[in-house]
Length: 66
Image 1 (cartoon, rainbow, N blue to C red):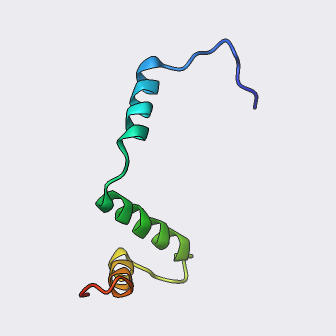
Image 2: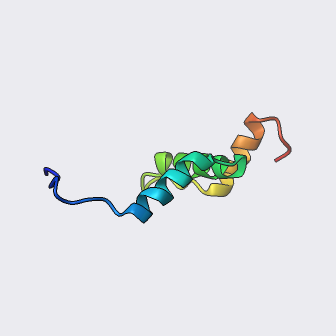
């Protein structure tokens, strides 16, 4: 699908996107994204993997108390 060059992007939306991109990601947000990615990557309908299971394994890998 080709974009129509006569359409313009919403200036407010572009400003919010730029602000979000420059803000960065906190350690907690990054960890939550990592957990979500892992859960969605290994869940296939047959295998049950919970966020709690992933969190526990990440804590083990990081040497934290589970």
